[in-house]
Length: 70
Image (cartoon, rainbow, N blue to C red; front, side):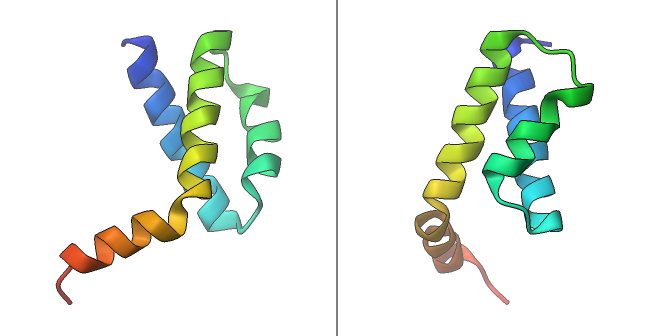
């Protein structure tokens, strides 16, 4: 699996964990890598994706709501 794909999967896992646990992303990111063996570049890219998504969450939600039905 490619490193960018792995990073996107890790970012999605971190986002899910933050949502499910209601923990801040900074806390999730700090503990997420404890049991994961990933190269530094994968970790950094995943963290940028996850933090960026959380920073723009309201914007993203607004765009999604416009396209949803029911």
